[in-house]
Length: 508
Image 1 (cartoon, helix red, strand yellow):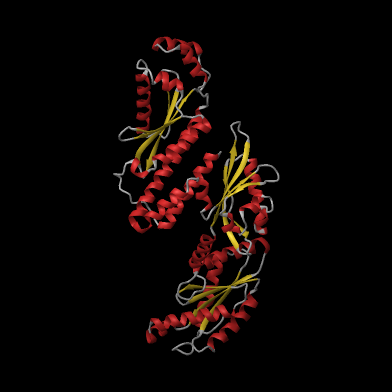
Image 2 (cartoon, one colour; image 1 turned 45 degrees about the vertical axis):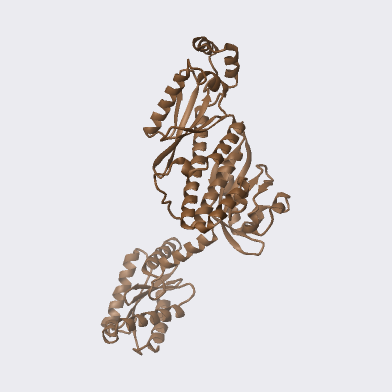
């Protein structure tokens, strides 16, 4: 429904303000009243539209002052008779008090049938742990009314019976679950607008020079759709038939893909054609699974798209199945965010977590992971794999005679030698201190020894900074049945020890 779209667009505007201001946490004083934080006029307009579209009433009450700040769509049976009559008004007040009492006791949603037989519901608006306001809706029935009971009420409280029964006919009959959904939806909109108000106020405090610009921007965005159009995110509305026609797309699609909204809405382009081919199969599978599971809300695994300019972007895609009043799916909403920068950042973080900071080759954590992967391949397909454990000879002497700065340079140069002389399929990393480990897939023990011999010659002939010649000792082990990874590492370590015992610059 349109109100769901409005909620999503409001959420995007909230994020836009946060991003612009680089506000990580709101620091607003808890002394602000709800009227300080929220645009009551805007919220009232939204509630008014909500009442006209759905037939549900709304009430927005300041929790501290108990002032009714907003009321829309109130039914005649309550407005004219139950609440409008001095003889029965007290019953409504008692019902409201009970609803509020339940909220104060921590209930997120409170519903109560009053003595008149009508059902009201309430939910709190809580910001940063503070209960600021209450949302009311209802004036509904959970079941068809007992006409005789209402006739007696008319007589008891002195109502005009015919007018009262006509008003009763107009009362909505809904399920308890439906009323709960309405209350949660209204609370979500109100909470979001309060949070937006907080961010806006903090923004004005931090950068007064932008105050007029923000006000102008907010005045220009009377249409919630325009807020979405100006964002870096894209809203798609698709039909739910096999064709999946683009019924609507926000103007921001041009920023994302390089094509105009008209090209999509005129069926000149199909969004699925932009999905990276290697990701498309999973995308289709997840979409079909969501349909089969009858999910109303779901998120795709992040995937790639190719833009008009040929650039590859990563997309975070959330979908909503929108249903009509009869429960049939009317259309599909897609909320697309460009997370390319985030993906690149994650890649950098992953690389950082795998890299030894001094030598810039792989660290022990990554080597452990590769060892377990190669061992699994060996168990599964008997794929050869060998390892070489290497230790720089007399490295302590280098540190003692030349200092740790020179020692670090030796480690860096030594790591570069190893990196430049291994094969593309090999993995080299710093095992610890002056020890290094090379993992050699598809390599027998014999082949590993031949490779180590070449590597030893390259190292011994290299002119290291400040210290000139450096040698290294080698310990080799190969994967073998009935041996664990620990056994294999111990075997390489023992072989390295023998190389050192035999005079160093040796291979065992």
